[in-house]
Structures are given as C-alpha cells and as structure tokens.
Image (cartoon, rainbow, N blue to C red; front, side):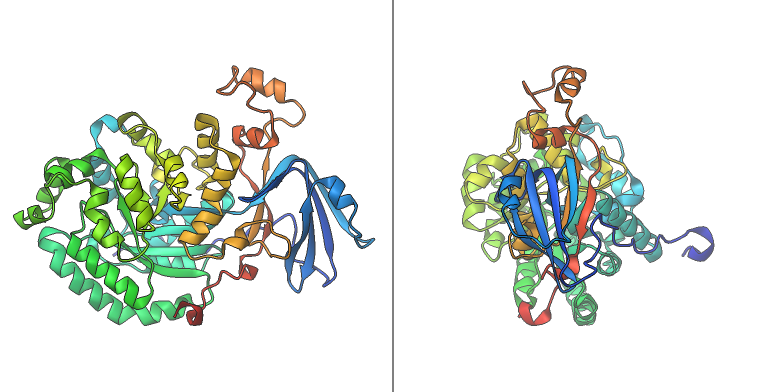
Length: 489
Ligand SMILES: [Zn+2]
C-alpha cells in the first residue's frame, strides 16, 4: 500500500542493552557488587552484597547477603568490586500484558466519563495495517520496554480489520526480549463461525512455520480471544481445545469494565451498540448472555478447560475470586490502565491483594503506552511505584507480581527472575534511590508525601523516584528460558 522505502523508515530490531557488567572475560572472573538494597520476590538484604562468578559465558550468583556476611567469604584476590550505594538491585522485570503494536500512538489523554467505546474507536482508527509499520511500532515498544528494565512480555498481537498478523510475533522473536505473543481475534454473533474457519486455516498454513521460526528465540506463540463482549462461548471453547491440542497458551481480556458487566448480565449497553454498529450483532447472542451472570461466571466453563492468563479482571466481586482460584486462572492487573480508565473511582480498588491471598497467580502489566504516563518507557516498574506509593503494597508482593508470578504465567523459568545462589539471572537492573543520604530533603519537597516517612528505606525511596532503571546484567540467552520444542510436547 505505502511505499515504505520512501515514506517511512522502519526502526530496526533494538540492540540488547549494554549492561554495567559485560559478559565474563575469563572463565574464572569474579565480581562483587555492593548496593543499598538487593531484593527479589523471596528475600532482601539492605544493604546488600552480591558475588557473581563466571560460568562459561554467563554470570552465576555465587553468594548474596549482608555485606558483613559476604566479607567472610574467601574470594579471589583479583575480585573486582562495584559500589552502588545510591542504587537498589532487583531482577529484570516482566510485563504480563501489553500491546507493543500500539506504541506508535503514544500516550493519549482519555476522559473516563465518555466511556470505553469511544476509546476503542480511537484505537481502531489508529491501528496500522502495513507490515513494515507494524514492525516499526513493535520495535519502538521493545526499545521502550528495554528502557524500563523489562526483559519479558506477554504481548497482544492485534488484528487490524480482523486480519490475522504474525508480524508482532516475528518482530518480538528477533528482539532481545523473551515472552509470549498472543495472536488476537474477535468472533461473536455473525462472525462466530467464520472466525473459527479463518483461524483453523491460518493455523494449518502458518503454525508449523511460525513455531520453527520461534525455536531458540525465547518467544512463544499464544492465542488471544479478545474479550467476553467480542467472543462467543463457542469460539472460546474452540480456542481452548485448539490450545490444548497444540500446547499453545491463551490470554483474554476479562471483567475489565462496567460496560462489559452490563453486556454479559443484561445484554444491553454500549458494548451491544458497538456490535450492532459493525453489523456483527444477531439475536442468537442472547442465548448465552442477558441472564444476570457476571462476566467471570460466564467464562467459567472455558476457564475450567485450562489455565488462561486474564488481563485486568478489575470487576471481580468476592464470590468470583474463589472461582478464579479453583480454575487456576492467572490475572494480569494493569494498575496504571485501571487508573487511566477511571476504574478506581467506578469499581473501587482492584482486589489483587484478595486474589493473592486466594493463591491466584497475579502479575502486573502495563497495557499499551496509550494509557501510560511515561512516554520514554514501558515497564511495570512504574506500576510498582504507583502501588507502593498509593496503596502501600509490600515490596515482596510487588516483586512477586513483576518477576516470579508472570514467569509462571508466561511459562518462563521463575528462578531466572530471582537472585538465587547457583543460578544465572536472566537480567538484573538497578534503580536509583530518590535522594541518596538526604531523605529528609526529598520528604519535605514532597509536601510530606502520602506516607509519614516515605523515604525511610531504600526500597521506598526507589519507589518514590521517577528515574528509569539501568541494566546491571543482561543475559536472557543463559536463563534457561528459551523455547525448546522437545520440552513443549
Ligand atoms: Zn489489553
């Protein structure tokens, strides 16, 4: 359609970041790093010291602990020491739900009073059709993810004008990031039968080729039936059976808005209007909705088939939380999207703490850059900051939801996202504390802040800072996370 050579430049695949610690130069190299805090989902040391030893071409954690403990260890005389007294060290982050192919749009203001459908129309109007342009948008999103210390993503590969596109998947596979790219589709009412045939034909023609292309890249293909208001139960059931047959992970949007609840429980409202406007609605849809059911209960027969990564789940009354736990449903909560769309005011705080207590695997996601307040980066670091400063969410919960929990949800090795003795982390990042040595200064200029003493600890200080993180270590190829077809049988 467009002459891409003359009218646009395609940002090429982003390079892997240059970490502070390069690959080991010798097989017996040892490095000691001292920082204000070293923390992962399981433990923390403040201050902390970390010893990395070369294991072939990768760095392996030899020891982690309080500096005094580490002082007692016998270390080679040529051990190099890096002091980072004004930084915290945490594992590289995972973003369980994003839309990298919308990155070209950038942050976009939204008035929640106008409802969700006008926003969807804006997204539809801005969706790219040209493969080079889609690849450029995804590459921009990959660069912004790397800028934010993100090493793995659960990405949704959108279907512009209902055309299935594997460009986001192959673009992600060429990049330094790990993760799953979920091919999105829509099918309800008049399009329910046709999407099953279209997808079946697409998978028959492309699945072996795509899976071959993905081998050894650390990226897997998933499927994403869009949401309960755009996918009939028959299409969901077909997707579940197909996923089980081919060992393909599934993700969907669930219980995101009040409009979705009205649509499923009553069969009315703006989501119905949306389907009518596009000529998709037919009255057969009323056979499965309009019975007073909540969207989560509506989807239970599908969630019972296999664990599905469900994005948002903002609208989850108490009784539905047990159902999510029983079906081993994983949740990707997107705190900044929740705020941007006004759900905090309309639906109340997200019940993620209650979900975690019920042993539901909750991860954090960013959703697309459109709803973010950080134009330069796409990272759950800033969602951790929102939850830490607004809700006092604990460090352990935040690190679980951005490292080990999303690793489970995306079928990555959770240990690669910890700082565990004997293991090679996929990556490590440092985050500056807000004002080293001068916590009182920052506290006063903050007008007192939300907490009585917000900068009491290095963690709280790093959560109050708005600085981007820095890469300390980047070695996803040694994380044991790369896809291997034999292990996926
Ligand atoms: Zn989404």
